[in-house]
Each structure stands twice: as structure tokens, then as C-alpha cells.
Image (cartoon, rainbow, N blue to C red; front, side):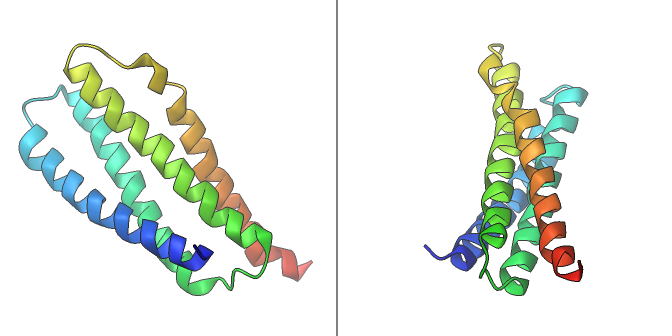
Length: 130
């Protein structure tokens, strides 16, 4: 799949599921989760949605003629899947009384990948100036 289509697909997927999960959290999980778990869930939704918008902007503004531009998309997608996905899993499993501890290291790894995506994007923007 071409990188632009990959970016557009995941922008739509993350955006759509972010809206659904955000509404679900606000209306169905409030009062059922502890305040801490609800805040964690909201953090996952917020980062997922912000990066959905970023992928959409990237899809329509980069030419994808260099490997770095392709890696921007790849690390952002993987970062969101690991970061938000692990938080959703930890919130769910913690609520059910059996926290999936295997997910714990995936959260910071996902966050690191998202940060790397932003740095790579900065490189794409500013490297031609030097």
C-alpha cells in the first residue's frame, strides 16, 4: 500500500475510533471506572485523536519521495497503536481485576515512537534549509 494511502487509512481509523471511544468513555465508563483509570482512558483517546489529525495533515502535505517521509507515517502509526492500545488494554484489564502487566512497557515505547515521528517530521521540514 502506498504510504499516502496508509496515512489516510490510519488517520480515518484513528479519528473514527477516537470519536467512538471518547463518547463511550464519557457516557458509559464514567462512574464505572476509578477516576485514575478514566483519566488514563481519556489520555489514550486524546493522543490517538491528535495523531489521527497529524496523519491526515502529513498525508496531504508530504510528497513521500524520501524514506524519511515514509518513516514518519510508520512510526506515528506504530506509536499510536502501542501507546493508546496498551492504555486501553491496561484500563480494561485493570477494571476486570487482572491487569495485563505485559502491556506496561508498551506505553512508553509507543510514546517514544510518537515523539520520534514528530522529530522525523521536523527533519523533513528543516533539513532542506541546511
